[in-house]
Image (cartoon, rainbow, N blue to C red; front, side, top):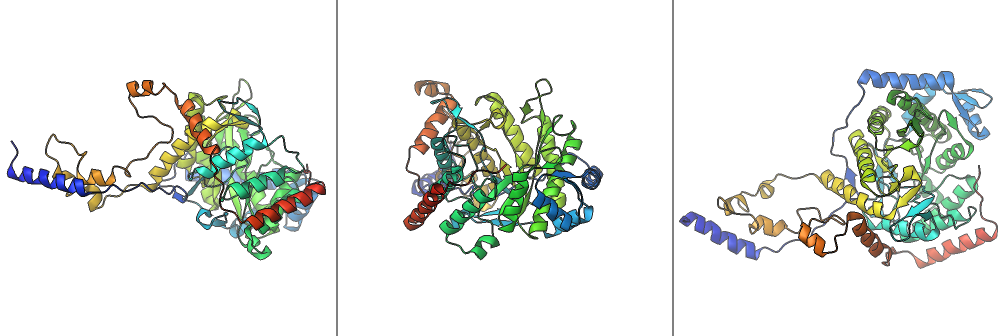
Length: 514
């Protein structure tokens, strides 16, 4: 039997609950900070040993540099040069790390989509650079212009994917004009931070001109903050080829952001141990940072790494492995030593969007999170070690990224959150909180709403057609790409952009340089 006090509480509960209007859930996944303390795999003295060995590697073993212009820049900066071998002193590395900015402001198409690259931030980019596209409707195929457009729409749709990626290679667009197509697609279909490939100075300058004019900024404004970024891969071990070296120089001269990323696979292009591979990767990254700072002290540059192992039975790259996880943690320790924003990666070697793909991508992702990576590339959609990007996997991976973003927001414990008056005091022993004022106020906003996960019981799920996550993901991406998701753009600027492309195409475009 209820006491008078409990009756009063119940009555107050009913009146308060009926008068509460639920609020609408609003989330912001664009500006994320990593709430987790960095995890370390090596001790402080071991990290120092890796750094010292990297410096020794640059001094005694050197980097093979294939671009004469880059060799001359290194020489004038104080490096010892023997033919195409460049030996970089530790004083040059120290000077470069002093001038390289520790915080970089990336300018997107919309000011609300601008990005800050610095330690502690967390920025996701979907799978990139794949020659193939795949989905459950059309199967695996050489990637096309239509695929590139659809991937750009998917990237634009999800706030948790904060920057654009080179997604897939549109192989039905000729290489001498492909950069026009990809740049136009990014500018007209998205207002996020765009990507430009480093495939020779003519293509890079074309893209810079299109970006500068479309954004309506002066040469000085364009050089003051990066309006785009590129990824530069060294050819491990210890080689910097012509287009990659030229890309570092071109981007540095114009004040645009490079992410210098050695791609070191343990047991193949790098020593078989985590420590050895990270030592090589660190040395190569430092060599790239030095080149950029010699060209333009203060030019934006991100430290990068992509270190995993190969399958020693087949030689194929493997991702999301324990060694991949450990290498990410170690790279984070090296990046924090430099103080620079840095890039790591997730990804999967699976051939389809299955349990293996989910396991590998999530273990790689958590390695990046625990390592404190600023930019996490290949965070969604990447399959076959980069040979394809899956529409369904983009959706199922974004689900995980959204949940991670929810964790980044943290939880509060104020008076209203604890809820003594609005929840605890309103419910009798053995009662329920469904109708408490706190629940009624927050039931539409408190919990994450999934985009593809299905929390229905077995009976309801069966009645709905027994669809698994990949099938549901197909329905999600189809709805997104079939919508008119165009961003607001200036018609005159679009016309000017198209005129520029038509003129340059008539002149023969700009073939990629090798």
